Length: 66
Picture 1 (cartoon, rainbow, N blue to C red):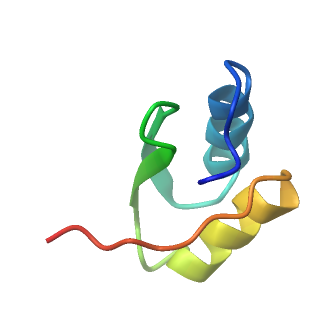
Picture 2 (picture 1 turned 45 degrees about the vertical axis):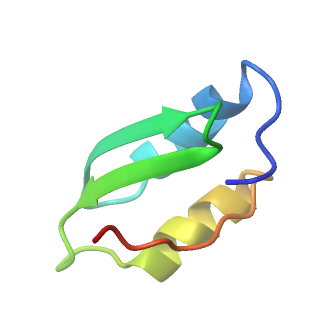
């Protein structure tokens, strides 16, 4: 989530992701400009999650954990 640049940005991103059905946990890190999302893939998808952050004003891209 490269557009995060202030203390309220992570709060907005976390709220947007939390509204998505199937999201179980969200950790947003301002310093790393990242969000780690635990979700049920039978209810949502990475595309829906990136759309949710974009709709909140914070476009994001998917980076898969290894």
